[in-house]
Image (cartoon, rainbow, N blue to C red; front, side, top):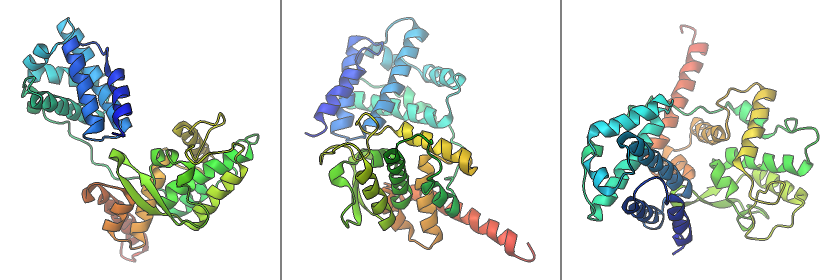
Length: 325
């Protein structure tokens, strides 16, 4: 099974998180289950590992001993709320707390299905209320200026790194990719030599096919022409100075320079280009279902968030243009 090596690595990483041996074994089994049977993305499993580790460490201090399975099944809703309150005191936001509680619920359901025990205290604790928010895209001129921003790189930066960063940003805005999806592409995936479609592996290892604009193809071909490394078919398409897969941090720093140079808000992140892709398509009349497919959203309700952005844009235009507004 393809996910087996990753699962073993995640399980190994989960060991020694401050719990008794029986809990360690259960945690290891859960991570193998998440990566092989549920086929969750590695970064999602890593987030769940951190959540569970924090919970078990809290219990160790809260109760004065390493938690074992008997201890986990005797916890009350008050104990769980105490953990969430302690995390809140560390300035952890509602979204992170909600994910943490969801991870704990999943873990306890796993233990129950394995016949190890049951505790309804986790289900008795309500998920934190999440603030309502809508995606924050860039305007079309700002997005275009950002992708085309040849004056943003450091003066002494190699030309090939500027071409690389431009290719990545063009891919995010032109095809609506997540930064992790763009940076996980291999050379054999590259949309070059006239290819106008790209197969992308997204969350949960689900694949989708997205179109590639000619300008994106040209940007990638320009980067490959300037790239000093000789890449093999299975090598990362976008590499750093040491020849390894490019770190998202490099693109984030490029965006930070762009914000300063172009007067963009703090919300102008790599992910904002994906938001911009969807919002601009919707504003041009694209079908919501088609946008859902392009973005790889499992639920249409996630994609519907962009209708609020478009509605806000229309109302703003109405207020500024209508003579009686």
